[in-house]
Every structure is written in C-alpha cells, then in structure tokens.
Length: 131
Figure (cartoon, one colour):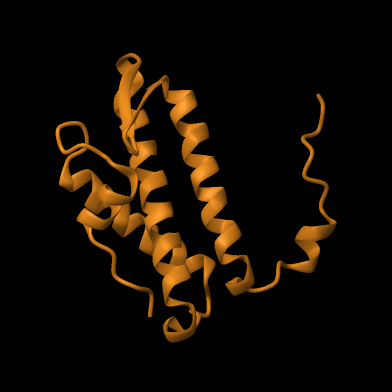
C-alpha cells in the first residue's frame, strides 16, 4: 500500500504559500501522484521496508505536479513562485522543466523498487527521426 501524504506535508516540503497555491491544487496533485506511483510501482513494494523512500518520492511527485499546475495558470504571463523559501521567476516552460527535474529525483529514489524495463523498449532508439 502506498503511503498517505497530506496537503500540509507537501506544502511544507516545498514551501508553497497558501496565497499562491490553494489546498485544492495540492490535493489534486497528491491524487495524481498516487495514481502515477501506483502505475510505476506495480507490484507495490513493502511499505515497512521502503516506507521513508516511498513517502519522500510521493511528496516529490506531488510537488512536481503542483509546479506543473501552477505553470498552467501562468500561461497568461510570467509570475513569481516561492519554492522552499526562494522566489523563482518562471515562465511556463521553465516551471515545466523544474517539475521534470523534481520528478526525475523521485524516479531516482524509486529506481530500486521499480520492475525492470521491458527489453524491447531498451532496443528502441529514443532519438527522434529527423525529417
């Protein structure tokens, strides 16, 4: 079973101010993160052995999704976002790149828990076809 995380835990981990990021946005991001982790970690690892790692990864994935949702709201123009007490002036593309980096850190944490990749996927060249 995946660990439960709260809005307050995600808000505290990233320092999202309540005036910029509503509880509803953080709750939506937590639900999205649970779905994403459930797909990534199939079958689910033992929470007694991996609990702390799972909690941290869930917070990171939820926080990354909050950043993406805030980036969507920034489509009208650049805004300031406070992340872990640091003011970050971002455009939507920068916020999406930041979210991808945060989610990459979560994937690194979860790498030992994920099932091995599909061998056929390893044979596929990931480079785009020039055309």
